[in-house]
Amino acid sequence: MKALISKKSIVIASVAVLIALSTFVSLNIFGSQGPVTNAANRLSRPLNFVSTQLAQMFEQIYGSIHRYETLIETNERLLRELTDLQLAHREAEALRADNEFLRAYLNLPARREMSNEPATVVRWGGSNFYSSFVINKGYSNYWNSPISVGDGVMTEYGVLVGRVTAVTATTATVTTVLDTSFAAGVFVGDGGQSITARGDFALMGSGYFMLDNIPDGMPVLPGDHVVTSGGVGVFPGGLLMGEVVEVFSHATGLGRYATVRQFRPLDSIHQVFVITEFDDLL
Image (cartoon, rainbow, N blue to C red; front, side):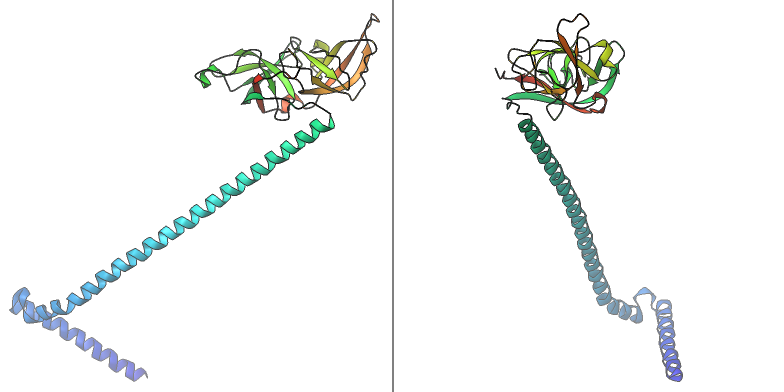
């Protein structure tokens, strides 16, 4: 076997040498147009054509493979985006269902048409004397800004957290329900009489606000829920505000007051909704 391979190798090498010598002699005797050169050119033409066709075919195959890989990547990206959208939709439906359950559990009236503008909390402010935060919406965000001083501000769960007290080109300041300048008419528990909820210096640091001047005979107990009364007030009716913690008698012996805990700590809020328009329930 080795001898056969060796003989074949010798023959191939001899032919190659012969072709090379013939080409060299042809070029030196006849110039570039010698018979050997012409024969070589004629023999190479089909090979050049075939090689060109093969190159074009491989380029087309490579292009098709590249396009296929691009389509696969695009399809995978779209599938990921679809999955994210489906997850967001399920979460939104779960929040809606939780909100409806909470409203039914608390026996709250359904709110009528209400327009709101979403915003993000960008900065918190506060001290022993005031409580506020800043949102990322102002009058330059719109040709005719729907946000104005006095608008109520709530969370995605319909919990009232404050009202707009200043509007600039790009931001608005929200004074919270803990601030001493804040006040709202509210219902407590099953009571049908509206009383006032307001901020208090002594309670602000603890995250509480106050129900003041509770009439004698009006049932107010720890655990009762506090909601806005609406009517001709600044805020729509039925917005949650908090839960009664304790009920006290004033030092003068005239009337009672109660401390109220918020449903959600203010410093944990990042997304809010400015109530720009609403229909009174009463």
